[in-house]
Amino acid sequence: MAYRFRLIAEVKYGRFGDFMKNWKKLDSIARERGWATSRVLVPTAGPNNEVVAEFEYPDLATYERENKAFYSDEEAFEVFRAGSEFVVQGSARSELYEDVPMDFPGSD
Image 1 (tube, one colour):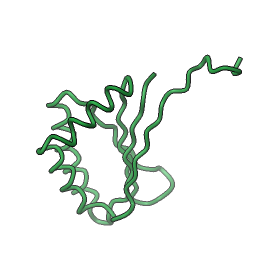
Image 2 (cartoon, helix red, strand yellow):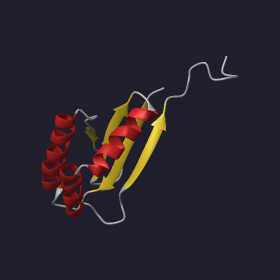
Image 3 (tube, one colour):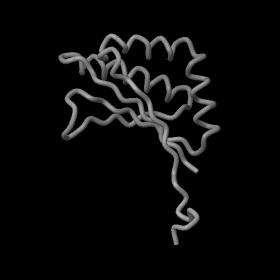
Image 4 (cartoon, helix red, strand yellow):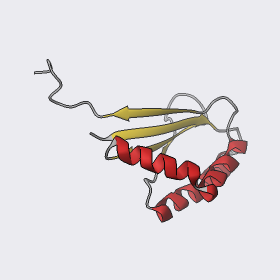
């Protein structure tokens, strides 16, 4: 069963370039560590300046292992924390989704 983790936040007006520059640093660190890298999305229509970073994991154990490694990695967490100056305080949230089995009981 696969999992998709999403980080969602509103970026301050005029700071989107700075946000993306910082995010690229973070993504580079993830790549160097062999962690999942992100897909960054913005709404075609919807809330202005919202950004969504999606990460895909093959299973919950991989998500948990990489999440623990991230929070204990001083360099990665420092870059992540530095990005907070570009985000509207209180707007950030996270979501974790899992695949629904196609053989779900009663779905025949």
